[in-house]
Image (cartoon, rainbow, N blue to C red; front, side):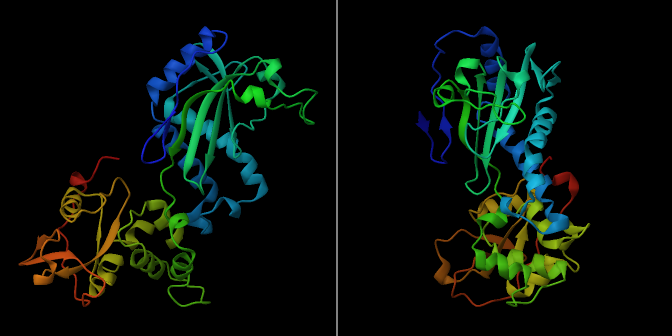
Length: 333
């Protein structure tokens, strides 16, 4: 296998012991649609976010889901993959891909897919993902009886792949990156401070104050709209970032600016060497007026001053006003 710097594993494509022309056609089609698993990863991210429903629950971890919600995850993965790729409905199974019946199965444990009687002998699209690890994998396997566990299976007559059966999976991709779950990647003490607005033991009821604390604590990190919705827990959550009463104006006295997805913001962020915000993303950073001690650091010009990303011991000063934004200059959704 070939492992890239971000952990993505490029599968080594080896021909199956017995050539399966139908599965090869499905494999080729899926590889053409999603060669590195990026579209699949986005569909899985949407699934997790739908289940967590952070905007209304404040949840951001798999462990916070109810048992019934976890059980429903496989169905949502199936639906979101179909929406993403436009697969036709199958006659007996989930999808029809290249005129072949394909059943979609998801599991939190790699390879532990539950296979119903109607899928025996058919092609399975097996999907695995772990939000804590931020990784996902997907592969195809022909669920032949000889690669399934013996007996009648569980009470629904579902069976699993044997150890040998797992070796027959044709991996489309392994260990692809999931779009980041921002709150899950932040230190626990920072997340706690966000939800109590920096006052330990205090349950903060003000969405704007929680969003302010998010951008205070997540400086230099891309923050997606899902994280903002989870923290704000309000219908108009994206308004909590803007100026005129949002985080941009509230954090300005602390020297913090929030770059969004707009071209003018992305250009400034790029000059400073920061990650560039994509659709629905923002990134906060504290700025300091450029002084002799900052020679060699990347800088931007706003107003009549030059600004750098503040060093830890730089004094706090009023941040500059960012350029006005227009929807026409935003990164395309």
